[in-house]
Image 1 (cartoon, rainbow, N blue to C red):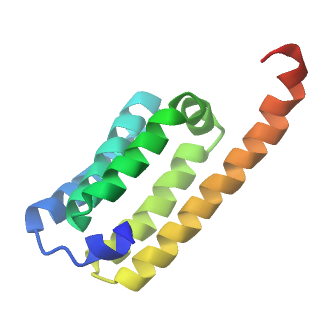
Image 2 (image 1 turned 180 degrees about the vertical axis):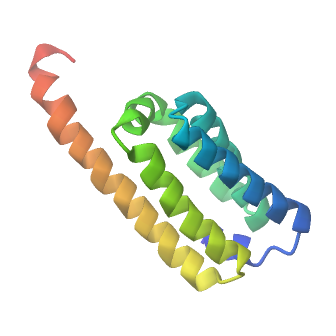
Length: 135
């Protein structure tokens, strides 16, 4: 819903900020700079919430992201995850900038499903094998 609403945003300064932040995210991934990538990712989502004009969604998703921050650090460090995320975000942002809300929503759902699948894989293959050891 946020991606769909962001696609309807007419604020050219927000649209320009979205483009610039996506470029920063891509550069950070290319440099394998996790801190810069996380900053750009946070800023990109903040811009999307501003474009969508949905403060409730912003609060809910920010709260969820805060709760899984530590896992997210390890998740982002997975081989190739930053670049895969950039690729997924580029497709979503392109559809938003093309004002194609339906495609933006479809791609966002696909992105979130991909994140979920990779997170489950991380938990099953990395975390659970050590759970009985108190990790």
